[in-house]
Image 1 (cartoon, rainbow, N blue to C red):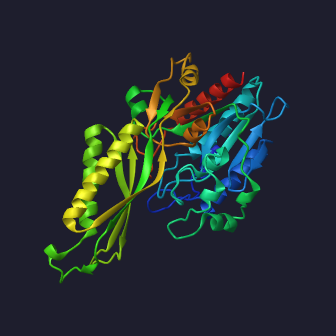
Image 2 (cartoon, rainbow, N blue to C red):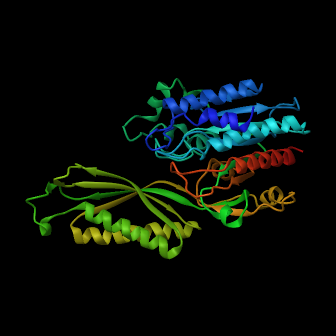
Image 3 (cartoon, helix red, strand yellow):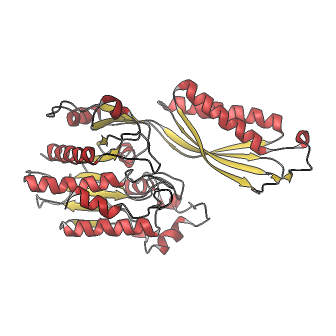
Length: 401
């Protein structure tokens, strides 16, 4: 049951032949096919599969026969961003299964059960809230609040789940007895490339948030309306996007307007409204608040000059996550090729949600030769992936002993 074979099985699922990118949005046919694949892989290994009412799954291996209490959890997610890469998420799931195979083949003596988890809607690409599955599983978000979410087509989350044959009222996977969570992930940056290391360990996740900017103006004719008579929200948006770029660059932070909707979206019409979503990430929560506040201030100032109006809504904000430093040091130290580097990440992960919920958590990263992620160009060398599998197996075995 090799890593290479499993990776070949997954590569075509949800792949767009034109761009080479992946569309594996939650509760669609591609993502459902991947969950069926995971169920089959768990069954083939004789694992005890636990699935919940939104599609989260945990496959348990209990060599002790004493039940799951105090078990180690690993895994990741199978969904993707729109037109995303192959490795973000699935690498952690495939590596977890391969690591389990390796531990079994080595005859590792373990004193605790090991679970391989798959969390749904990690990317937030459909319903706009990242790590939705792990938020519900840890109880950091209630179903009463989650059920109010709608996707960009106006479909309610509860309806999407019902169409997929799922019932969230049946409950969520039980993580209350998990003693530790270790997530392997492709690195989304070039830190390991610059260090010449195949594997690294996470120290922290930067705080980050998603904010909706509604720029309101007045629709009018693109040909007959004099420039000085316009109340054009596109101008306000354009200046705000430039301001966000400048402020983030000056501070060494991240600010991105990656999604825009225009009303009425006509070539020959001045728009009445532009809605844009800002993704902002900083090294501290104070810096994040200051960055977004400054971007909003400059946008409001420009709106006053354009005769438009700006309204900002925070849709989701995640605080800083500092992973257990002693656990990270323990995982990173004393390997044949030397200590693994301990590095921060600016990307959000299910590991951050479990850590914030009080579960001791660590992350392993596998080198990404280009540093590109959330793109069809995301990649990892097979040789590095296999190093990652061994690193995960060694980590789990060390913790389980």
